[in-house]
Picture 1 (tube, one colour):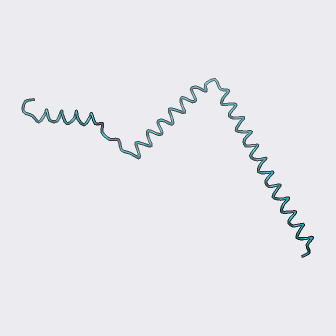
Picture 2 (cartoon, rainbow, N blue to C red):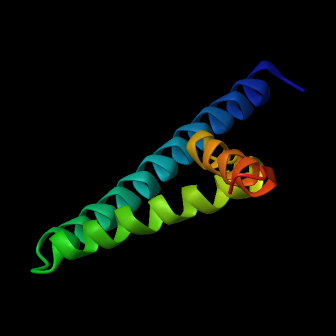
Picture 3 (cartoon, one colour):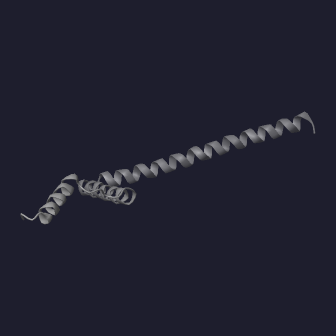
Length: 95
């Protein structure tokens, strides 16, 4: 293998790396252009406020469901006090 062959292989690898990088940049720009096009379409809708409100409500409900699965609902302090008071009235002979 001569010095010229090895220099040619390095040049080919360098050209290939540049081509790959250019391809990735082109792909990224194409994806960004598509996202901007869709964003313009969404922002141009007349029902945008309703879409945002629906999305907000859906996220809130999803959060509520997740918290309900992860952390069991605890009894309210006031409900416990009322329940104890009602139980003590029922057990006392004056009631």
